[in-house]
Image (cartoon, rainbow, N blue to C red):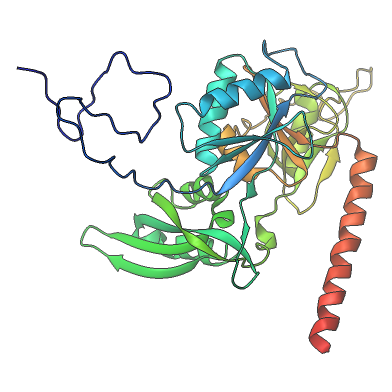
Length: 365
């Protein structure tokens, strides 16, 4: 008897041409199918990231494949097997490639695969894929339906996290006999960036999250300012020292350990206060013959906070990029020069103030 397979079985076919793609219908010549089977529609991409060659001070030192053309070729080949990813050439920068995906997890998995293959690259902050409504002319953004199963004692924490600065709406809440609560939200895709690691810490790992694309809805405005984290930014290059990092540990959470290479513009930690702070992580202890009271004290430094590529995609700011190599994953400012960053920040602040004044005048009229 010829081999048979039913729905859900995995089979291997030989002699299939390269032109066959996911969703095509294969049939026999003796008993052909009258019409092709409809393929379920794929959820549209919700965010995009720019991929490019590493242009940082440590470029080419840890990876074997470093050119933008090789990075683009690898991304294009990924679309042959992964139909949920779309790759296009950037219109603003010919050296960069735009990758459209369905969340930071999908982009993070792709980046991890590439770095293990020897690629070295930078990734820009994620941008939500928006559109214009043809009927109203208003800006639309993707919304997702989020299911959260969590211990009942943490349900309030989850509700506050998603309905506050992240602009989510609670649509359903139910309890079971095991002390668990199921929460259903409608949240803009922007509001889910960085939500997973944050809620895992807040609920001590008891939250189980699932989200899927819902529909495009009207743009709901800027996210809350509570989501913006201040950073500790290095102003010198060299190896980070225990003496310098021990003094900086009180100012925030460190992302690097003693002995790691740093350079100006590289993010080495998270600031306890809002805004970025320029620090010197390579400062060495002075060697002289002066006696001090704490000379023989043992320095203690907590272990650094290590973030994966997926976590960094949701954590990074608009003016930052992720530098990925087979050995290291670093977060740095897109503009390494501190003076240029300061001037750009002042110009952005003036622009925001002007927009607020114009909107206030419009309301008064």
